[in-house]
Amino acid sequence: MSISKKNREIIEEKLTFIYGEKRNKKIIIEIEKLLNKYSQNIPFQNKNKTFLDEKDIVLITYGDSIEEANTKPLKTLSKFIDKYLTGRINIVHILPFYPYSSDDGFSVIDYKKVNPALGDWKDIEDIKQKIDLMLDLIANHISSKSLWFKEYLKGNPEYDNYFISVDKDTDMSSVIRARAHPLLTKFKRKG
Image (cartoon, rainbow, N blue to C red; front, side):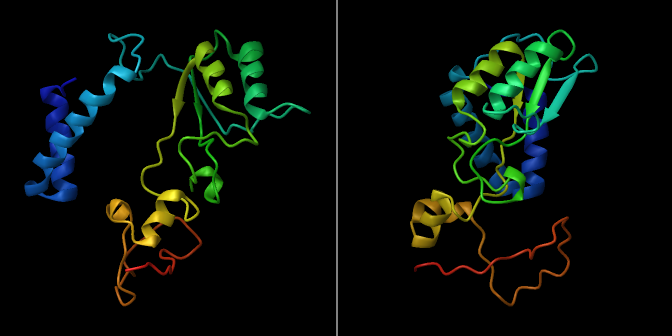
């Protein structure tokens, strides 16, 4: 799979802004390698349709927004889609449903699992069979309880580039974010 000229220009512009001119070329080559390696595993149902347009109607929901006694929430959501949404909307965006430690599901412990309190991958697959499904890829932060962070703390070099470490005297006063808790958390790392 190759990136169109137009999309390549957009991506290169953003990568240059973030990483600088020198690194952006290497990064886009790596992106293309990953696309070539994994794109055959991504089923495209309609290659002529744009991702989203004004005709799309999207329900955005947490996996546990609709509850039913003695039923996992994702099964309940699936039934709700059958009963009330079929023919009315065409996309369901389920907010993070992975196991998490905080931040309303956005502090992911394991990206490969469904939070067992919500259901399992079979439930996600069942919903996908009924309606187009949109999911969150939370690449900008991860739980301190995740395997990746634990390996980083152990000093495993494979995880060095996944986390940012700053000196305790670094001035972070100009960072603005919509969170009540501190920007940085102190951890002890081997090595």
